[in-house]
Image (cartoon, rainbow, N blue to C red; front, top):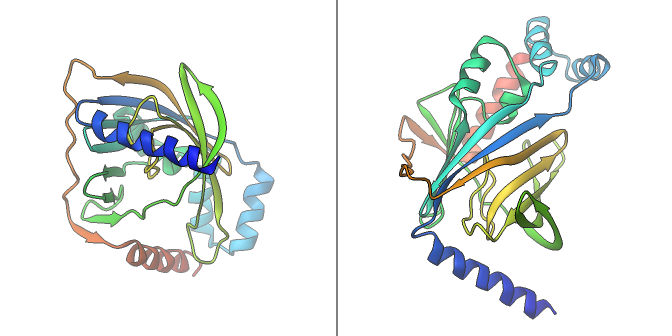
Length: 244
């Protein structure tokens, strides 16, 4: 039985390699965040011992969980994900936690052939961060999203060393044979149509394959490139300063 599944996934990868030479498209994802209650926000501040200025900023952001839309463009072996322009402009006017978790003004780039994965940070145009490859466990469970038959895959990610692993569940479709997805989710034998973890749900709501207008992918090139380890250390120091 295991050999049959192995053969099945090998065939899928073969399809991907051949189809990526011609397939291109654009996918729109709706990103939703389950709202926080006042009690949950208060509890968070007690645990973190955050100063008052930071509390005001974070509270406004956490209590605003309006849905946002992210866009994934892919062409041949490359993809680029970012929020819709109008969503970026909206986030400037009002703090939105959903927008932050959906990528804010960051740009995510993947080249599946060169194994080049990076994120250009939203708040720092002179900084690009390498994205780690993801270890997926593909299951036999299936469901339909729109007209596409999807397979379930699971991974466990660690955002911070002092926090437990986060289980992330995704649904991908081999019917669109590209190894891309929203934000920093990629590397499966088919397009990722849905991502769920903690309070977040990201779901494809519109898919345009091989549009008349050619899809152009421009790799982010601004500024210094940083490893994941270096970025985590920088982030750790940032949050330490917030508590002072």
